[in-house]
Length: 335
Image 1 (cartoon, rainbow, N blue to C red):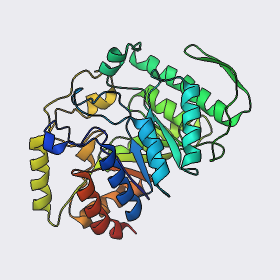
Image 2 (cartoon, rainbow, N blue to C red):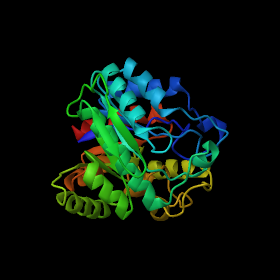
Image 3 (cartoon, one colour):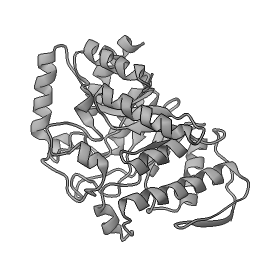
Image 4 (cartoon, rainbow, N blue to C red):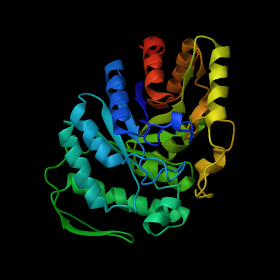
């Protein structure tokens, strides 16, 4: 089992705009990351947005400059950085990721996100592709990145991207290349992950649903002769008693914004895990039931591990305080 967390680059993971809940500063992210590393967390995931999807006027940390800064001040934790095709050329991402891999001495990874919040594309004047076309573009995007990482000279001619005799030096520290994380709820998303992901990420769900998704993606991956590993996201609320955990859940729900706007309604993640429901967190949030006592949370995480989940990317609020609680109360039960 590998434990990871989401730095609160939006300001928080409860989808709240209240000032007392928001801290998207680098200082806060650095503090949380150093704490997580000290506690024994092995990885983190930095979400990529150019504008805050909860409220565009709120602060939003840039993913890639934050990843570079964290690489320089940490020693052991993996730094997964999300990237959306359309904002930057794949060769540029390949170069940036390779450089951060050197800064971190081999701890860089990327998370390919085909995008769900269309407002920032409109704001930046980036063409908006239909849902399935975004995954076709993503495949070309990843193909160029992997080719640039692994070949001395690399050329590619596709529908969305063309590169000619690219040379990337130095190559990444990690060989054959830094890990690639891909998630997807739709059939095109799952097939892309099956074909190209080292680790396929799944949004938070009950354990039976997670098992079904793992089985489906494994079947797709077998068509390509591949065996990806699996990770999942979840929001954690840990307290000494179930009643206290439920009370904290209700308190946080009362702080959250009612809805998000500007998202692509064709995205399956939105259809299956509505942000308007009584849940907390993003990417499934509390749907897996990691709300309860330390023993209950550890038991539920073991159940997910038993069906094939290796990596847990956890959300907390308030981040530093709840990271510390999880490290003290839950992690010893998972050892």
